[in-house]
Amino acid sequence: MKNRTILLLLAFIGLTASAENPYKKYTTDLPFSMPEVSAPVIPQRQLSLAAFGADGTGRQLCTDAFARAIEALSAQGGGRLVVPRGIWLTGPIVLKSNIDLHLEYGAVIQFAADENLYPLVHTSFEGLDTRRCQSPISAVGQENISITGHGAIDGNGQYWRPLKRAKVTDSQWKTLTAQPGGVLRDKNYWVPSEGFARAEQNAKMNVPGGEMTEAQWQDIKRFLRPVMVSLVGCKNVLLQDVIFQNSPAWNLHPLMCENIIIDGVLARNPAYAQNGDALDLESCRNALIVNSKFDAGDDGICLKSGKDADGRRRGRPCENVVVSGCTVFAGHGGFVVGSEMSGGVRNIMVRDCQFLGTDVGLRFKSTRGRGGLVENIYIDGISMNDIKTYALTFNMYYGGKSVAEVLASGQQQTTEVPAVPVTEETPIFRNIDIRNVICSNAGLAMEFNGLPEMPIDGIHLKDIFIRAKKDATFQYSKNITKDNVNIIIE
Image (cartoon, rainbow, N blue to C red; front, top):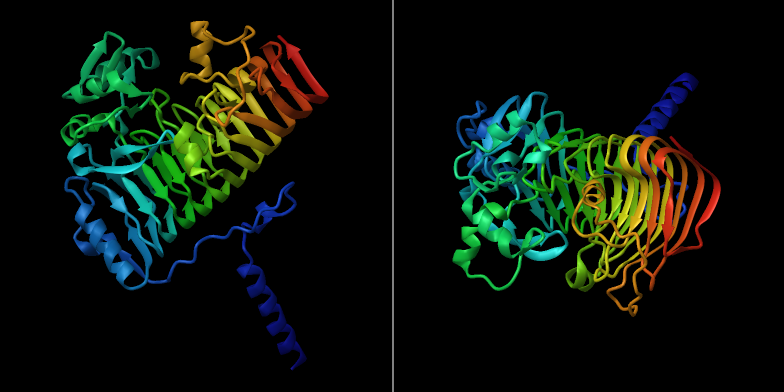
């Protein structure tokens, strides 16, 4: 009897341990208060995509099969939609509450290269309220959703993106510009359609400006290329272990979501992909980004909260975020805040990450007109290697180009500028703690380039070792503390 009691006790202890939230460890012992984040609970039932007449050879569209399968699961209260091994060609997939889109080994979801499959929707892009083509994968206002498994999701990005000749080999240029319907804007710049070329003439960055008729919107659809995964206003989200690649614009874009976990994913785009950010976490609350890899043509891990008046009107900061155990390969920046941060960014922990070959390691960027408060950022334990420009940069003069492009053009803001009155449009960066950083082979060590009316304030650097070709520079910054900061110029 005694032995049986002991066995039952041990079994109970085992069940209790196995039921404990594996993500709890990321929100303990933080320098700010953050609630525990756990994975969504999905009902146990499951259905196979193949049971809905989907073709796994990549020859026929499976759009209707995805929609019918998701609707069938939703009608039963949710569950797992299993995508088996195969190539599943499809148009947009819309996720619903309590559903896990699960890709088995060998499963590839391939989004079709046909703009007619992606209707225009009202959304936000680059921090502005606008219209874009519907995202390949989307969810709005849903709860308990996940994308898991070991397959790959491909956005067919080359159908949508423009191309700069300087970013590709001669062979790539020849192949990619051979797509039908494309237009050479000049000998070094190609766009995928005439409508795209017309849209660029009046757009502000990548967002059309001014009043437009419906016919005009439809004419420029290819220019309105979507982010690949758009999750808006969702709660309890998990992206786990899947490969997300070749997106039309940004790859992963959670917007105004709460309780989100990104764990073990690979988000990648070709190095030449314009606006090919790997992850843009925007105005989200309580987020974990862990054990993941990012390899992109633009920023790697980027926190945002809306741009200018639209972002300030939304007024939702990106807050309570932990980034841990991640790797960023090619990209404009490893960990990035901005430049769309008009709603604020606060309470962020970044630790135990490596940036290998990015343009910049740690990148903070904004400009006059944004507004927004960035504060309480904690960075601890970063290893960097082969950083093309700065290991660390704070730049309040962002103009839409990468740091490498700015340095190459000679347009970097290095001289004194006159102060202007402080208003709600003035960006503020303060109270940022950076420690235990090792960087080997950077182009430049550090840049602090603030505004005269609002200097970068309260940056604490401790146990920093950087080998670079050029030293650190400081302009319009105050209360910068240095403890065991070593810069070796080579």
